[in-house]
Length: 426
Ligand code: AOS
Ligand code: ZN
Ligand code: ZN
Ligand code: ZN
Image 1: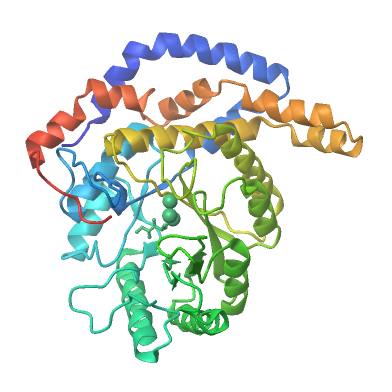
Image 2: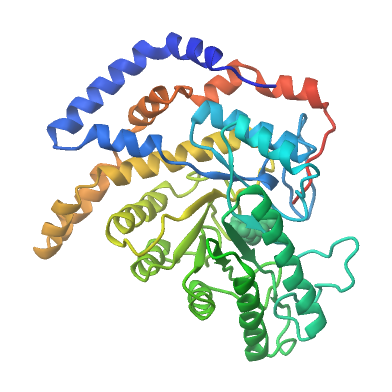
């Protein structure tokens, strides 16, 4: 199944008049306010988010999994799926692989397929939270933190292997998320496991090529329910500092306790040049991995406000590696990802509307009401015509989800792959 640019153009032509009216109306309004509409559209055109290889099939919970027809069964299929997302949105031009779920058989063939779809290989993810088929030691009681040296060594070696695979594909970063922790008080010595983790991460860091970055992801709980070694941004930040310049913290939106001020964490990390990676999703309770923007769109906008401010201000902070880290339990994964991509672009565009100079001026005046108005005025603007225009300019679909439905893409995938195919991964 491969969509053609012609198909998309035909679809766009049928909807262009409505779009044009909506766009002209909004653009005129924004230009009158002194907003650089063309500049914003250019930024939207250039925004790309990586899709993780494990998000393309139906996810599940520990209570069950409801499969979806036409799921990708191989890495090739997964790249094809991201190709569909990318040709429709022009903002999903990267894949993030999980090793060992996605070890390529034929590197050249995989690279060719990806470049056919204009997809690059973003960060590679190691997996020491599951035992692998032929591995000698179990990670039941921890991996990089383990009290036994030979188990830590096995986990470190796995990360080396992931780096080597990533190098062959052109990746430039390694993401480490550890489930290491304890389920009961007394199970672990907090200081010992922290020291072990630091030593292990340093070895991994030193093994990376000089052009690579290391992203250290934190998470407060799950699968361990008493303690997690890298529980919060502070611990991740500290470990990144210990590793060196090219080690960074990775923020996953779902990895915070309820009501945490994530936008402030983002600002703090960018201020220190240490925000390296970003996992988008949404949640109500914990690491729910729901569609981006589905539950707390205002929080997402406030986070983007800090990201935009940081990208302009903190030149010592690299542009974060963006990725969607969501799980799709009841929706078609591709439709869900299209919705997530849309929500990310909406929040980004709204944040770009904020008049930072006015905001600063009013902060100096302590005019709290106007400061709030400035933010909410941007948030309450329907920016979708700007996003559509950006997609039109890059030959994407005006409304990707609608196009996905009209083209009956899922039906084609089911015809091609069958009703019972299953993706590897979570
Ligand atoms: C786990 O909770 C983290 O969000 C990871 O980033 C990711 O979901 C995991 O590595 C996928 O296997
Ligand atoms: Zn994550
Ligand atoms: Zn997570
Ligand atoms: Zn999550």
